Length: 430
Image 1: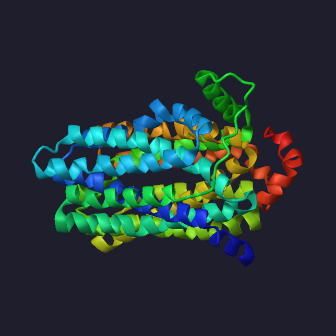
Image 2: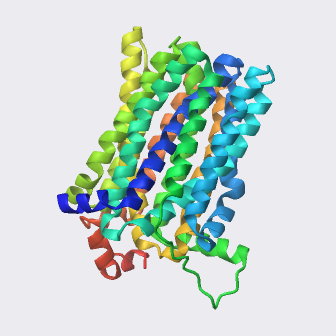
Image 3: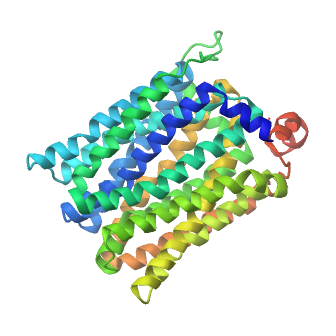
């Protein structure tokens, strides 16, 4: 095991991808709390405006998700990663610049969030599809775990940095740090030297609509893939019902300061870290399928704790931190397991379209969740919106019980690769 880990760390291209992805995650996490803080504290946004901000950020996954998959399967993925992060860094500079000249308003924030979201669609789909070009299949779980560990570190430090910067230099100018992280990421990923093989079928005429349909058909007709994407769709919708009003709920109803809120968000990163360290062990002990089902259940249980936060300031903070911890740990294990599953059982020529289909369907529910959260929070109260989202999270985990995942008890993804014709074919994945 240690030799495999050593081999991965001596892979220069993987190290550059790892550093680039780490910088990108830090940029994402500072912006994740920073943009809502700009809206809530600097612009005094209403619950509906907070929901619209989330909608603007995630709507590109519906509009451009499938198109991104076709492009990413047709062209080398590294230049797409570099361009996406360069443009994210440049676009986010608009927030502090417009604040400096007194022009910043919610319309500007919506536009920046939407265009940055387009870049995020292309980056996320290309990044997930790019890893198998850099490491071997036997190293995928280890590679995904290391990348998830970086996400954990960003989750721990990023929100705290964002909350602290908001109090020192105000939220709009904290976004400057986000831009720097994205530029650093673009530079490191640009330095990856391994040439990608763009696998296409030369005999097939290139038809964008048919290629999109092929990605959709692959996901829909494979029970394991469809079970995961169905769960993720309900999960993401429910989580964004919560997240769209979370900052408003914490700052207005619970009177939590930006710095304490940053610490609470940082606990999410601690959960991600635990999850990234436990994912491979869980797969080895319980099997691939049970790990996926169990991790979704753990994440869902954490989502219900925020609306239950009552009592003293300390007890409220601790309850919310526990919720973030469980949520982060479950999501991390779920992400590592399901991404590794896709990377193993999906042919390389379809990786971009299958990953884009996952993003299109599951992340496409995020803007709807944001709107629902804003509407429910405005009509029924912020705490009620959090309860509604928490119940939806539990429902999403329950959907996995109606899939073949619990029977998928292979103890490693290498084993899954070697035995896929025997153990998976009967379940619909070939």
